[in-house]
Structures are given as structure tokens and as C-alpha cells.
Length: 303
Ligand SMILES: Cc1cc2nc3c(=O)[nH]c(=O)nc-3n(C[C@H](O)[C@H](O)[C@H](O)COP(=O)(O)OP(=O)(O)OC[C@H]3O[C@@H](n4cnc5c(N)ncnc54)[C@H](O)[C@@H]3O)c2cc1C
Image (cartoon, rainbow, N blue to C red; front, side, top):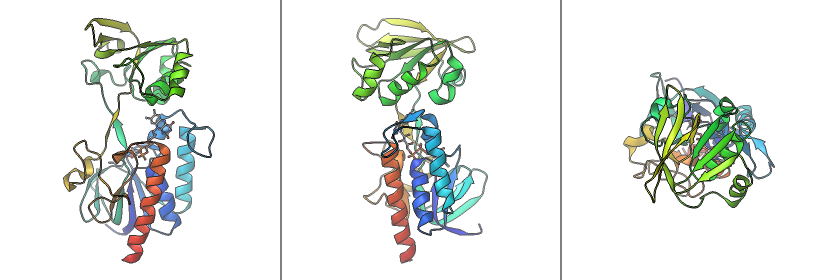
């Protein structure tokens, strides 16, 4: 352990990158540790059109711009996975190394929730996918089933129509949760068929996905849909394992913070989707991240 950072950021999604930009620009010695590719969920989003001031932008392009901007002001990027955070703000990485900081930001986001039905787990990467942007092109001319009725499910279904022959959207209720704009786009797309009041019960495969069995929640009747791809969009769970021993999470694993995004542990902050919040979006994630940088700046200067 050679140096002590003013702010160590775990996760290079929008929350982490906004914090990195603000912190390094204000002169804090800042590092950002990322276990995957920088960009977080932005990399799984084909098109973003609700980020103010940017009329429409590819997720990957926005991610690249955010990263460049943070690095330009001096943020140090570290590839690695943080497996544990100690109360004294020592970070333990999967490769056995440690990083020490005066302030730590947990900006680790969420992971997609699985359907937890037979046949799903063993077919991830063989037809079951959680990322339309990454895998959509593999299903050119094929049939796809999307599970879920929220914004992501509908938005990604429309995206998938450029590849697929047909898309079935399966929803549990008799109406969508998604915004009206996405509902309209789905209704107007004749490649998409919506199957309501049904839940998935089994993924069928012969080494690759061949279909899915769904069940009507009212009649209990089962139906098999032949398809090559299954995209579950049924929610997500926070990635907060590395702080689980610190008592800063709620029962669902989301990190509890005050109005300054600080946990009950002095100097340990959380931002973005890992925090229990009403609107998990890019615009709120970057707001959280900026606020954390300002709070960290105050703390470091006070010390
Ligand atoms: C399909 C889809 C479409 C979306 N469309 C929109 C949209 O149009 N507009 C909008 O505003 N929002 C959209 N969202 C939501 C938006 O992407 C998220 O709200 C936002 O990315 C949250 O940012 P974050 O930084 O909190 O987390 P994330 O973007 O999830 O980033 C977290 C990062 O932390 C890293 N990480 C996790 N654990 C560790 C660890 N232990 N060590 C190191 N690194 C770690 C991850 O690899 C990841 O890169 C969409 C989401 C999805 C899935």
C-alpha cells in the first residue's frame, strides 16, 4: 500500500464517472476502480434520449465521453474488482492488493435479476441474454422472447426488432409498467406481439435455447413459444456485497445514505443505482456522483 487517495471510487458507471470528474477537477487525488468495462449500464443501452442537453446519444458514446472527461482532469483508472471495504476505508481487491483512501464512493450499480426457472442458468450465453445491445445481432432472422413490461423491456424489444423476425413480450400483468412513449412504440411495431398475464416457467434447449414454456396466471394454462433468444428484463438487484459486513445496507441490499449520499460510516458514500431511490437513471446517478465529490472535497479539506 503506497499512497492514500483522497477519494477512491468503486465502479465506473455514470455515478462513478461523474464523481471522478468533479473530484479530480477540484484537485482531489482520485482513483476509480472498475471490474468490467468503463461505462456500466450505459454499455448495455443502445440509445439514450433523456439526458438533458444531449438530444440522442449511443450509450457507448456517452460512456466514452464521460470517461475521457474524468481522466482528462487526472482521475487514475484502475482495472480490478473490489471484494471488501473496511470501515477504515481500506479497499481489498480480488487480486489481493489493497487501496487506502480518506473517502470511498460505492458506485457499483445493480445486476440483472434472473428469472430463476429451470433451464435458464445453463443457457446464459446460449440464447438467454441480459443485454440486447451486446447480443441482439446474434438473433438475425430469429424469434425472441422478452420477459418484462418496464421501460428497459419495451425499449430493448423495439431495438431487437431490427434483427429478429418476431418478438414476443411476456408480461405478468394485463398492462405495462413502462412509460407511454415506449408502449406506443411497441403497439406500432408489427414485429412485436404482447402476451399478457403470463409468466415464464421453463427454458427449453438442445444445447442452445429452442423455446420457452409460459403459463397464464389466471387459467394456469401452459404454452410453448419456439424461439432462439430469451431476454429477461425483470428488474435488478444492488451490487453491495463488498460492504455487506458494514451494516450500511437495507434488507434488499441497497445502500442507505443521508441527503449528502453518505452512509452512517464517516467518509463512506454511495451513489447511483446501488442506492435505494425512486428514479434509477443516468441523470440521477451523475447528480449523486457530483454531490459525493463535493462532500468528499469538504471532508478532505477539513482534515
Ligand atoms: C437496458 C437499459 C436501458 C437503460 N436506458 C436508460 C435511458 O434511456 N436513460 C437513463 O437515464 N437510464 C437508462 N438506464 C438506466 C441507467 O443505465 C442506470 O441508471 C445507470 O447506468 C446507473 O449508473 P451507476 O453508475 O449507478 O451504475 P452502473 O451503470 O450499473 O455502473 C456500475 C459499475 O460498477 C462496476 N462494478 C460493480 N461492482 C464492482 C466491484 N465490486 N468492483 C469494481 N467495479 C464494480 C460495474 O462493472 C459497472 O461498470 C438503462 C438501463 C438499462 C439496463
